[in-house]
Length: 551
Image 1 (cartoon, rainbow, N blue to C red):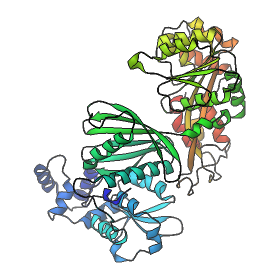
Image 2 (cartoon, rainbow, N blue to C red):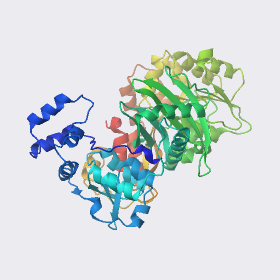
Image 3 (cartoon, rainbow, N blue to C red):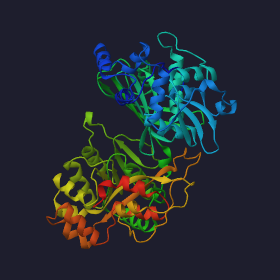
Image 4 (tube, one colour):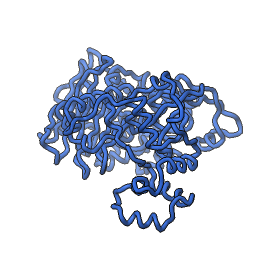
């Protein structure tokens, strides 16, 4: 990204009120003076900036107080020369955009100076960008600006009014950086006085840049020009579009673009559609061998409903596409109803839902049944009408694959019943319900370790024996995090003969879940524990992902 995004020339701290309290405790300023200064300023003004600009305190002193209270060392960058080899390890645009200066390498980590030791987001994100461990030091804003001007001089400035070329470069760099970091989403969020850029990497949002507020309009306008079906003139209502583009590394990506007007301007979220999902089969989803065999048997049944459940972002759509790849053969006719159609699948008839013209899931499903399909995939069952038609389709010899938004597998029975589907129809037509989540995988740099007593207690593992499991390491491939990529954990609730009568009863979801477990159903957490033991993920990751499954 271009260097003009570094604009902070005065001390601006992520937790100013906390730092002001530290300054009072240090005797640098008294409460009376501080109250008098606050009365002169609006709530949006920086008190610390005012104190420095009006000679109450120096930026250097404030940085020293911040350093001593964060456990980091204060340095004056101008007191020594930085090795050119160290300077060359960091891209100028990254150093200026984030606002940090590399100082040296102690053999274990790259030593860098920052100005705000309370900015945990930058301190957490920087090792990802640099691909190595990082040791932090604190310097003043004045020292930082002098160092960046000396070692990373700006090559270009914005012309007044924002020319088009820098915006194009900024957006191109954003797409390339997001792809390099394997991001699934790009979030451009207008704040009161800035524009925040975040990527979702392995399910977690990471703040990567802050842009001046004046760039919001040009950025959004450029993205709308690149997108299909979006109007530059319309800023009052949400819009959706798509972008297809080729990146510098030769990759071709599709993005689903959504804009929403907020009180600070238009917010943009772009979902990066990973075409590698098209090539996935069941083995790539993260099943262990026994669950893969069970799910393979279920999705190759000639009829019935197979449901995949979980919250948004749990990988349900990817699982459905993997099923379609697995089932797609010349002797099978497959039709899908999707909102929207994210990927085009060769040999499969795909129908896009368009509610504004009456093409709802229910309407599409009725029409699809007249096409004599063997297999039907419905992107999501959202209402009773769609659920009833799907059940009837299953009972007349079709295999129906779909998704529901429920937290676990057994509660999907109650969800369908709430939609108005009779329980005896659910018991007759539904073959299996699979809940799933995505957890981060251990990188290949994982190192030997053992489960701590706290982890073992939380996961319900016998604490009387030391459980040896790998733990995250850190390398260039995973940007020092020890985790790279994601895999699924699963809870497969098969509607067998033993269960069918229970489904057709008035059992609550909790009672049904308890009985399903007695009959051998593994919960999400139990499947996660198996994958920890297999060295595929970490104990902390499973604890985080299955927090709602603790019981």
